[in-house]
Length: 259
Image (cartoon, rainbow, N blue to C red):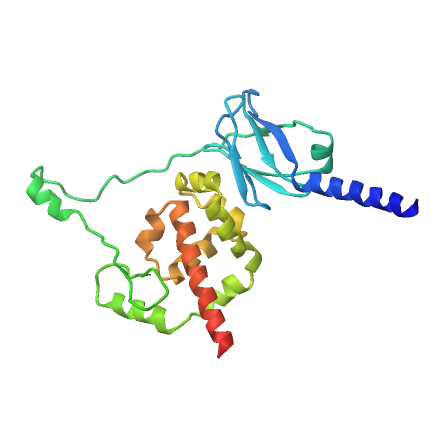
């Protein structure tokens, strides 16, 4: 009888644990000023690296467990983080979450600094052309190295990237292995990839990888991507660049340990 009781107890506890691991929570996101629902708000579970978006009624549903962190973002609104509680899961709550609109101040924008004459053949020669060159060398496990502008220095930059396995890689990747392991999960989730492809603010990336924007830009730069690439790339392209650099770092670290 005692064994039977223990068996039922084990099954009950296991069922609770399974339910917590695979629970789907719901919520509604509205505007703080008028209570109207917000459609297409990006909702990302930072802990499990999965994403979704609100429907026309501002409602969302996403897989989560207790203490997971949800990141909510919408263009023109202040992004917020929400902690998933046990009550949210066990009681099947559908809380209403308010988002506040950002007050954007427009700054003076210089359209161009070119002295145009009105003649196309003359004016087009004044437009600076920037081409980023990326090199790939046969036999190396990399897809390429960003060389920047077409200048003599870019050859030195590429060779330096190949023969000097920069210590900064260990400082970034080695100290944050958990966050960097999320890269593969981020690349597998179609919803997150769609979100990142439409963004250029790096906010979602910094939240997912737990780094600030300065370190993120420095990381991509030290991975031998040019300033022009960093300035023009969307968040998905930055994600792929970091992922490529991380895979190279793991190969270098593995080979170093064998020596």
